[in-house]
Length: 391
Length: 65
Image (cartoon, rainbow over all chains, first blue to last red; front, side):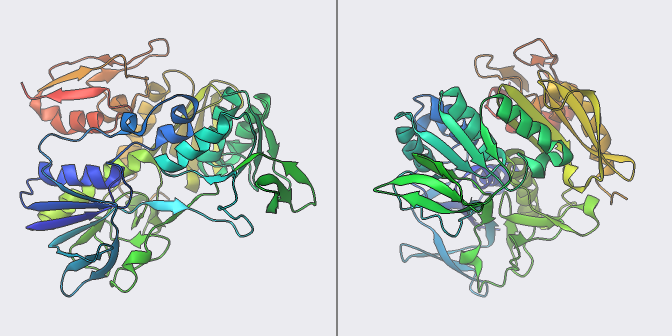
């Protein structure tokens, strides 16, 4: 492998580039990124960045000193030619590759009936999105957040911390995907902190004047709003791969080593990658957590440099800081059929819950200080067991 | 190999502990993690590197001395 092109200049792209060097890759390394920023950290965008005066430079990710990468920022890849092994860039140039890293992440999901061009309507993915939202929060607006996932919940927490009037409209309890049956407790915690959680109606449109005035619900009500943030999940950014041969299905479909199916000499990492985790017996998994991007970066680089790699079988993990509580989890909670609260009270500041499938623990979630230490025994157990299918 | 912690950055997430429990520790009262082995054995390199990489706030540094 002499020429590697990394498409995507965020966490997964940067960490894959670094891992390529660590694995001994000594050739030309080009990283293509759409934004006008070097790689930066996104988790603070829903939290500290909104409530402080942090600048984008404060979010820049540390880069290893010997990276020797060429950065092509404010450019995107338009097309991949599998036969010629070239990528065509938005500036009209093209690049040859022997190895291609797909790390284009995901983009906020859009909702029909919500026009993002209306003043006061926001989404939150980039530091530029966060800056424009922050500018409006200083005007003490009434905020309505559409969506109750991690970003919606963290954003609600941050806005309450700023003393704002906050509503969340969601069709599921808060954090339902991550917490399963404990999501009701997350909703209760948000309400305890003064968030109006509307989980009985959907958003059908916006009320507008010269800017947004409210969100219109399926039950006919309108919630007044000066700022609306749409946070209803993300969709993998794969349109540039159409026609490349890569198999696209809710992400870039990979084999168990993160090699892209249908596109030779390519690997994928981060939010965009969908691969068969060995624990799931062939079922594909796509994970949008920070830690996943870092772990897949290392695995994808190994696969690209050495041409072979063991199956990627991580113990996924996440964290989320909201309403004064830190939630942390390990494992594959989403495939659990039973949740057991081992300690504490799920709506409180401290608890430990086990996620089980047919009686076997497949994940654990903890809240409270020192939580990682309480997750450690679960992680140790799962490191071995998630290498083969869970029952 | 030597690992150091910037205590002004550490927020006690404990991802390092999950990656390399022989090297790091965390309890419910300390605001930062503890480094148990500032000079880990070479045999633990992979775990230590993963700990450094998965720190959400880049509080850990690995030095080759």
